[in-house]
Amino acid sequence: MRSRAGHAINGHARSLAEAIILQSIEDLCNPVCRRGSLRFFKSDGFVVCSEIAGISYIKQLAMFRMLADVGQKKRLRNKG
Image (cartoon, rainbow, N blue to C red; front, top):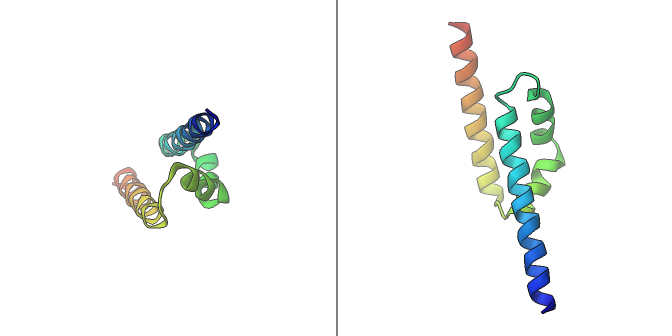
């Protein structure tokens, strides 16, 4: 019985970590929230949430690359 409870807690922690990451991605599109979101991605918070969510280091790098590409395209669109 105890292992089921531990498994459920781990599952909830994983879901919460995933939700934090997804919300931070969404916040990048909101000018009011962007600064806080960028701080999250630059901090250990992203690394910790990624580890809890089971996101490998390689996938973390891929996420950074994807977000950087989106940010650059958005800046180019706003200029021209």
